[in-house]
Length: 114
Length: 116
Image 1 (spheres, rainbow over the protein chains, first blue to last red):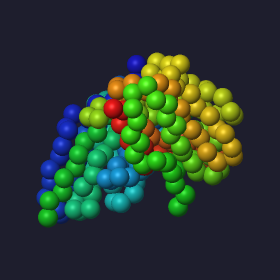
Image 2 (tube, chains in turn purple, green):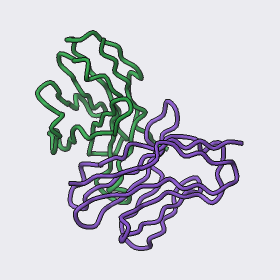
Image 3 (cartoon, chains in turn cyan, brown):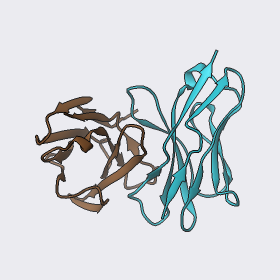
Image 4 (cartoon, each protein chain N blue to C red):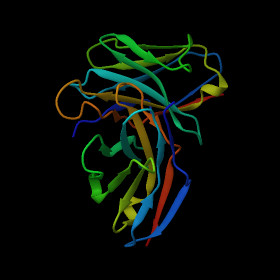
């Protein structure tokens, strides 16, 4: 069965410092992996995805994520956090053969303090 | 940039009542989805819809639920006889069928349903 785990409910980081939001997955076969961000009163906004190719993918707002097959991880990173990055971040996985279902993690609240 | 929209943003209803949650997917998208998120829990897949029929549904999506595309722009989720445990945030999503981005679902802002 496909699943995603986000082990941290909350991540606190100071503005200007690097940030990492962790995600591990369990899926049969090669996964499609996604990160979404949710700002208050907004929907889930697509940030980036890994489909194939380079393990380091770059997305919106300066975020990037590294696909690590041996560790089954897809951690979200940013070299220098902004206060405006404070939001709820969701990792999601999709089976390559099933376009329908996304499996989401429980979400990680990122707090960036000035 | 085109967005998925949902109305209402918050719906309060009495247990046993019927509710209809509305979504307007991105205009050239042909695949539509509903997800829900019970407070403090994961976002869960409910149903996918293509070509005027359900293509996949989860075990959550029982006879209490139905989906419809009543016209060329709206996509609705109907919950008959709501229960307390239906209280959740309901997200609509859509994706294109061709070109770049067919693998990405785009989500609306959600409707918070509160069943009293």
